[in-house]
Amino acid sequence: MKIVRFTKKGIYCIPGKFYLDPWYPVDYAVISHAHADHARSGMKHYLCHDDSKAILKHRIGKDISIESLPYGKPITINGVSVSFYPAGHIIGSAQIRLEYKGYVVVFSGDYKVKDDELTIPFEPVKCNEFITESTFGLPIYNWEEESVLRSRLHNWVSSNQAKNRTSVFVGYSLGKAQRLMKLLDGVANVYVHSAIHNTNEAIRSSGIELPTTELWTVNTQKQALQNNILIVPPALLGSKMIKRVPNMATAICSGWMQIRGNRRWQSVDAGFPVSDHADWNGLITAVKATEAEKVYVTHGSQAIFSKYLNENGIYSEEVKTEYGDETIDNDQNVLQES
Image (cartoon, rainbow, N blue to C red):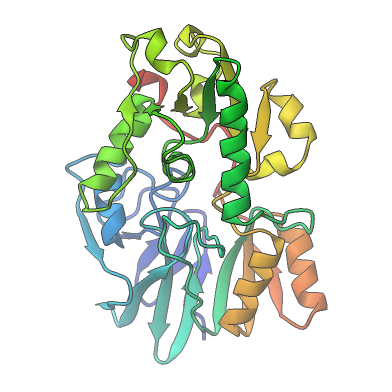
């Protein structure tokens, strides 16, 4: 049974007459999460998870036509049952489950299998067809446990404090920043750029608790930052504003930092492999848990991951999309908020 079709506008649900995370304007868009490559402006109507609603209104526009659902509660659109299940990627992220005449397709969006102690953990959903990302679909990618990662970040901050340095962490404003706030909670005072602060406020408006932070502005006293922590979006690297930070040590936080050469690429002091995507083993675990008869592999290392699945008895096809990988420069409208 054919439920979805991959089109120039995005993934189209044929009987439902709506799109999943479309990248061009459509009448009805079902959104997996609020990152800009999956949730774009110009749609006549949006459907998302409850925790993404305020974030989408903040990022796209407060007057957009939007409705939301909690995890596990279905809605019927032109005979198709649509429901959301936790993806573990960022706050509000969801896998989109479609059921039509007993046939089930699940679009994962972006997802992370390991629990980051902030986002509702990934929940496998059994289906006939599974659409998976493959951002880190190479065996080299194997994430550390949260406790190990936390210790590494804390030790780096402590080392900087011994030298009276400000620890500056670079990560995009939605997802990575909140995870860093959780990992660094209680180590020192945490200041954040306005793009992160405003995103935090949107998240908190949905009743979600986040660690306490302070807004960093051009008027923040230099002494206040010393020995403390600052989290900024990637667009701030090299900007005039970041150069005002006294005696800073800078760390990029991204899954790509597991490859040592990427640390030198940005000429920063450190790199930590903090990723909101599944690693190699996570991808394999997630796919197997769905028990899907057919798997579509989207953005990332499609060829390698699809080949692995086929060689291991799971029928798979590669699909080209316009979704982005975990780049360190995927924030939008950041400098305008400086």
